[in-house]
Length: 441
Image 1 (cartoon, rainbow, N blue to C red):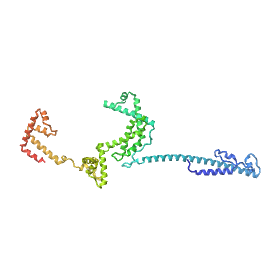
Image 2 (image 1 turned 60 degrees about the horizontal axis):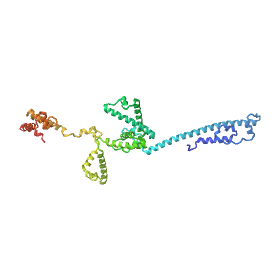
Image 3 (image 1 turned 45 degrees about the vertical axis):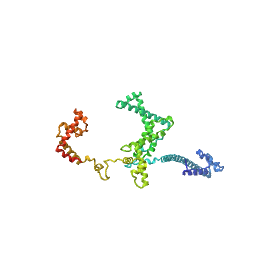
Image 4 (image 1 turned 90 degrees about the horizontal axis):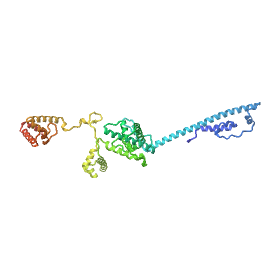
């Protein structure tokens, strides 16, 4: 693991060489058995013989000097041996430390390289407040499940799905959710077994969604910009993942990631079709709108201008009304509470005109006309006025036929027609009816 020689290693080698050259006693180096240093044979000089015989009494000055020198040499050799030991420990400890940190850095580089290769570094999306979106956007640290784990977790998830189906079935018959005792009795199980199924099922769902979150994010990332945010796409993809795990059969030899891929993609596409717009558009119409938009872009580049409805319809071989309908439905709805400008507080609802009948002058005109009709009806008999009110809906109700009025008044259809004719003839002869001409456009 060491790519370079540590600096203290040279110091250790220098000390070792000095000791081997300056000292002649084999007992000094016997304290370092792991260094395997070749010692020179002991010298046959008088100094060496006197150095080895510490019990001999020396009386001459030269012998005293020799003994003192030997003692100093022994002390120096002991200090050198201690320094050598510390150098060996320092070199070995530093090597282990470098090896440990080198392996950690290598693992970190490999993980970062795998993330960059899969394209997950771009998933840190900032929202409008400048904060990073967490939760579903962050890839999970869990790896894919092993075949044994896939089988175990999917079976627990399927047991919980069957339990939830039983709860819905009982709730439909009893019009309320069943209690734990009722559910255990219906399934012929113990209450502890039901609790265990619920606990294991929820833990299994959590582990499945965490382990395959990277797969969901990679699929959802390819459908961005089609009407739903990335968070919504990941949520819908996770629902599709659990739906696929509910139908997964490990005995067929497939992996859960391979089987659930289609379910995840199908759930995301269905959510875009059903939830991307405020007003839902059928799938066939969405396909036509997509073709119309593509044809519009191609013709716009070719002609250098915006193509007309007729030109697009001719290329697609469809009716002009279909192209016009696709254009109208492709527009996104705008809220009436939206501000007209960024600086002002006036909304679109305040400046957009309403229906003509809701205009103040038309409402006053209609009220005056009702008063004139009441004056005319007061000149008729009670039965004639009632028949006219029922036939023309003057009392605010739905107009009725002669037969319906006859059944309510216990008269025949012909008699009701005669009463209506007589009443209209009387109204034409009244001078007050001339005031109604001003309301006729």
